[in-house]
Length: 195
Image 1 (cartoon, rainbow, N blue to C red):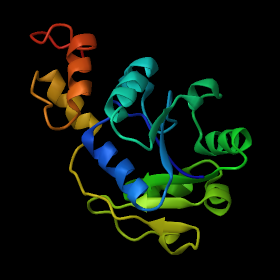
Image 2 (image 1 turned 135 degrees about the vertical axis):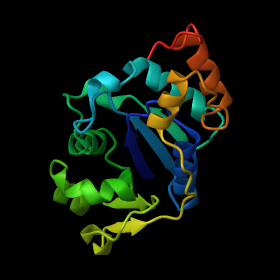
Image 3 (image 1 turned 60 degrees about the vertical axis):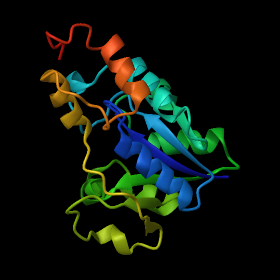
């Protein structure tokens, strides 16, 4: 089974994430596992909503998307969450599966700063989806790196959080189920932001 691993903070998951995951399925993967990271080594942990909250939103967002799976595996691995550790753990747990890492073009630009980046490319490989303004990178011509066609949706989790801080609508940016969850479980009082 060919699995695309789509790892992220998903703080929160939005419609752009879902579009990319669906595009990976259309590009020949049997499943896409959305791996919720408890602590990204390149992000400020204080900005993250609780892990369980982010995982629940991923589960809600993909409930009606066959082939998409939520994974909490990094919650049981040492922190911070290094992608190579996740890949090694999943390969050991599922030796008959073939895993490939799904990342955005913006992450490809920073990829040489990732722990054991060369091993990730050589042993697992990358599938890269375009991001607006992402220039050509050294790894784009590596035989184990492929490009994927995906919708270019200009949505970011940080922009969604900013909108929530201002009590602005996030309708159309996240699924209806995620939007409902946010306002029922995170923003208790819409007149007084909790962020």
